[in-house]
Amino acid sequence: MSISYPLPKDWQHPLEPPAEYKRLRQEAPVCPVRLFNGNTPWLVSRYQDVLTVLSDPRMVLDSTLPGFPHISASSVARQERTLPFFFRPDAEYRVQRAMLVQEFLPRRMEALRPRIQRTVDEALDAMLAGPHPVDLMAAFALPVALRVICDLLGVPHDGAERLHVLSRTIGSRASSREEATAALAGLDEVFLALVEANLREPTDTLIGRVVSEQVATGKLSTPDAAAMFHALFYAGHGPPAYMFGLGTLALLLDPGQLEKFRAMEDPAAITAAVQELLRFVNVSHLGRQRVATVDVTIGGQLIRAGEGILAQPDSANRDETVFEDPDRLDLQREVHRHFAFGHGIHLCTGRALSLIEFEVFFKTLFQRIPTLRLAVPPEEIRFKKDENLLGVHELPITW
Picture 1: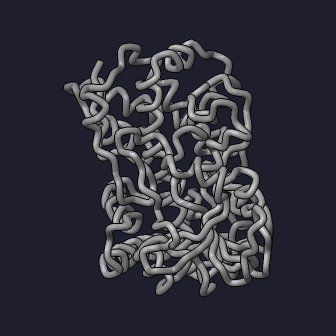
Picture 2 (picture 1 turned 30 degrees about the vertical axis):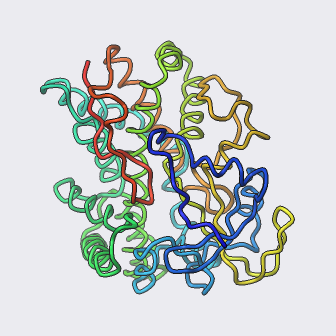
């Protein structure tokens, strides 16, 4: 009998992947799992096999294919609407991604660092001016993540909280198909309106530039553009906000590593520390979805054309054959490639921006509040157990 997926976590140790992954890496690195709808894709748990799946063009992220491993009702509901570019066939995906490459060049993102620093400082000033204990997520992490992506895209700030709520509905495995459909419709409405507004009067924002260069010239349809911007908003605020929370928690739970982080001044060391946090924490804790387009063999297992695959990033990031003592947070670890941003042609478009956000957020938070600590025992922190991203409902902190 196949294993039910997602595999259960031990919520007494929420930053750890399910313990079953260690056994699977050793005994059944490619095995069938059973999804909510009864489908049985292959779960791939070893680092090298995950790397192969995400690198091989014969295994595609195309949700239009029958064997695509939908993890939730929301994922199924999305099929009824205009799909974001990264769920399209590879040829379409490559065309639309190319439209964004210039917007996310590392040097262009680096030029945003002073603005991101101001955003972090202003949010931290506001938090410090208020009472404490305080919820880090509501007072600091989420406002920063929303402000950064809204400024980049050109989304009005006054509607960002509503868009976040709709995004959470889509990202929840507890949402019904009807709830997900309504949330998707709400997001579509907002981003279609933004496309149309920029067609009438372009703004100097990512949305404005893409609309002027691609939509106005007929290279990209209005629905495709709205789906693209919706996806960028979703991926550009939820994962960073959740990572702000979980990364802070991981450091507060490991005083020795936190002391090392506070002492870091070299930008390269700070970047390496952030990369280790990304390996260790794994906000994106569900499998990277793929479909085999031909018969392939992964880890000695034959996978037939049309069968779904889930390449498991949090398991691969704890693979003991690749990372020494992988269950230990080591901010001075020699850098290895992790899968927090994916890999291959679907490597996260905004990874350069995300790294800058993380560097600025964590360094500023712990430098400016050297006495920061949890305001509740760790076991009282409530985790979002039914979302596609691993996060906390609140992170009560004080100083």
